[in-house]
Length: 341
Image (cartoon, rainbow, N blue to C red; front, side, top):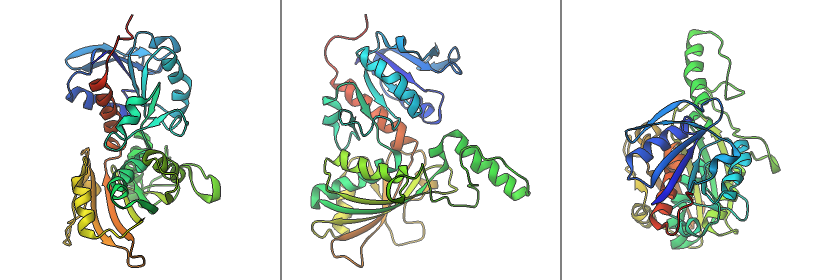
């Protein structure tokens, strides 16, 4: 158990779920603090039956804190989290800013917990679309070594924050009423639409979201030889990202073997029946911390290929739950003097 644990960004879409998850779990620290920008500083929140005043996020606020868990935009993380490290804090960061830094651990606890335990300073939680895919790849990689992955994502609007959800709900209402709605999160209407761009365009015509899946997959699995090609699409679904994944392994993996590997891996559930509704869908997976797989079948073009469908709640395992699981892991192994003065 830590002496003092602080949370940054408790009022955001992911932060609210993180707060709920921390509330449901046993105490990880003797005392808790909640930090936010000037817009939310001074507001009140209730946690484990006690009322807390949200403190202003500033460089000097981290003194005496042992563990920081942060859900903030990249620019906020870049500005403030190095001050937390300088103050002696362990930091779990939900933003994308530090993920590919060579001295920062990128962690999914079911896959590489030791990286978190050995980390100094910042521990990053991966991108939501990467997390669910790599959870599914890990048992295949251990059994037959993954060589190549082709993935297409169908990503929910909640991945763009509360404004993304507003764009879907209010945009749908406006579309049905024949009125105009001014988009907040998306440059194109998301209602009754699909947007094949998430993030800005980068090298070779791929977007930043697509390249995250390339680089983060290799870093988490510790194998730079894995080839990943991704297409990321925003669709008019409120919550849960879905993915079609084609995997080429070093040796053939049968459908039965894949089902057994998926089912045995912690945090995963197989839903795979050849009947109407016998597969994972966003409206049946939302609110769960699991990664669901279904539609498992052999690739008809490659004897070493396997295809499957993957669904997970992007705000939970794709974000809040993974960060809280890292915190649980650190709290369980925490030893030594507290950073509290």
